[in-house]
Length: 382
Length: 247
Image 1: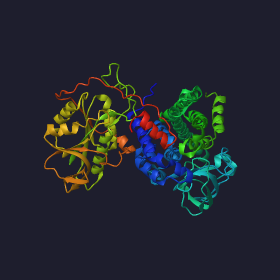
Image 2: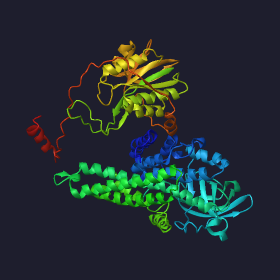
Image 3: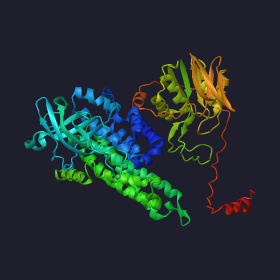
């Protein structure tokens, strides 16, 4: 077993850390408060190659492994997890989905600009009545011969307004149930698409979340991913990888909060000594550091399995569930260690606590991850 | 036009500095090594010049004196955009020996000019650049804050008291550059990181160059005293006068 990073992995970690600490940190509070989408940062990160870092070089991506991706996601999310989710959705849902299951024509037309970061993508699965229960798709893609006619509403769509390329999951054949679902590549600017107002969220406020309505949108047949009826399997397979992104985002939120709490505990004095020298605080930090390390190993294991071409669905569910719940605990303790200062925006930890909450909810709630894990136990896989 | 950037491998600036048991050497356990920040700015500007199609700079080479453990630092230079790296396989013991080893390599090369950061973030001696120019019999241009080209001819800018000075050099030169030479260090992109491994990193054995300096011992600065919070100006005056005896 080898815990040593390669030279390339260390360089990517350092590059992400440099950008996050040097560029993201100074305006993160304002972007959160005013819910400003980080247009300029996304442009810079695209130039550095982070928007398509997992995509193969022949499709204009960075060709990096998933371990590097976890390292980068942790560093960005330590400072700004909204950036984390924009990168995660683009890389591990949209680019991964098209690269793994798309045709050469689809890769040429859609994947390359996404990998270069010239445009971003969005993954449209959730609906007002179908979140965790992804089989209950109400959005319909009616087969009209050489095109599908798309109607319905999608909810909670990250990059909903800024994305140029949508991956839409929709029901074509109701009688076939989840085997009648298709995944379609849809141009965001196609006629019949209207984007709802920006959601006023509790956390991850500078990511761009919207509902999207489709009214008689014509989607060419060649934009379907895979065979007819492949959509549900496509969504589930893609989300397996997405969980690694969100797990490492949660890991970053936790380690960012821990670093701030440690620094504060070493400076702040009460009763004549630094609060880190009070056991009540020292033990909190000790638990935080240990839990973060455990979460990091779960993320790395899932990433390593994916890089080896081995099944990683259970490992990514474990990483996502543990890191999301852990991030909630760690950020809450980070606020507690800061006392009153933790409750004001200037000290960053309250934002990280708000951001952490979403990691327990999106891309499969913690409860859904436990269903995945417990079914694997039932099947004798664990 | 080919240019050379000298790189020093130094501990990360946030490193907690410790010494070995007899305080004669840095204890490098667990140290994260980085490109010397001044050299990183020099390299950033050199790469910008290479990427600027209107500039005559076509190749950037980096060089460092050090043992194999410094190679990740040189690989990072390649990821940032240097075309080739050279490692002189020796432990750098003082500025004179380092400059001597660099000069021995540079003397038979065709670099239009050599760039050194003004000092290194570890020993802060600010000596190698000047010594190197002297050993090579090149012009030494210190405190360079900018560079541009007049055709193929480099024009160096120095910040001087109340103004700026523009220089053209007849012959080869060593530029000793300060902050401002580049705005911020360049962060390597994915393509750079990916191609760094396939770029050449030559290892050459050192010439004879002996150090002049023996480091006898190191001493850490005394721990900072505690901070006293005062309530008003009267209390401040009282402390300055009665405790610190400054007024």
